[in-house]
Amino acid sequence: MPTLDDIKTQIKALPHKYVFYTRREIKYLPKIMTDDEEIKALTSGYLGTKTVLLVCTNRRLLFIDKGMFFGLKVKQLNLDRIQSIDSSYVIVFGSIRVWDGAASYEISMILKDSIDPFVQATRQAIQDFRAIMMQDARRPVGGKQYAEPPAAPAGSNNAQPDALEQLERLARLKDQGHLTEEEFAAQKKRLLNG
Image (cartoon, rainbow, N blue to C red; front, side):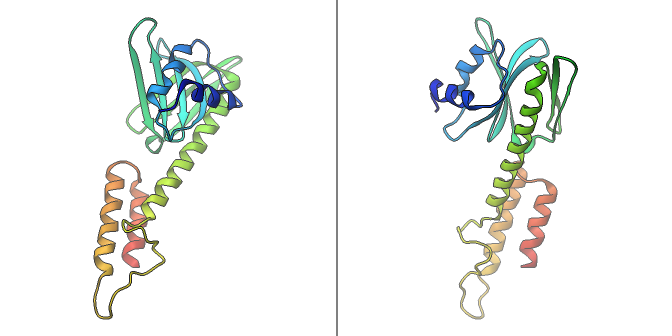
């Protein structure tokens, strides 16, 4: 679990951030984030009538609302579940809308100058996360690369179970939401065609 100092160091290193009235949420970040998470972008605004801190990490998007005296609401979206992230703004403030396929979340009253950097950083984090997930999907369960055919005695068919294990792993990744239907179909076709 990262410390508050680790979190503050990551926040200071961000080129664009807007953290108006979200100190309570920032103090709670160490309890939410894992050791391997890194803050990619950060901004604040209103989700409905509540002030929220919107944090993009290398793994998920967090909406954090720490109550004035008590209570905490955390909404998290894994980056691979986000369908789109859109923005709009007028003179000084704007909003960001995040779609996850089932619902949309609109954060309003965000300082205009922090909207585009946040959206761009989040889109890049989504691409990076999906690329990592695809690399994991391509990696067989046994740890060998696909380019290396399994060593098998002549006449035996040991490649069949390995391909079956790989298909099962791909199916699990798809069921967990880490692969889209198209990505799953492409990997399945590649496995079956050898």
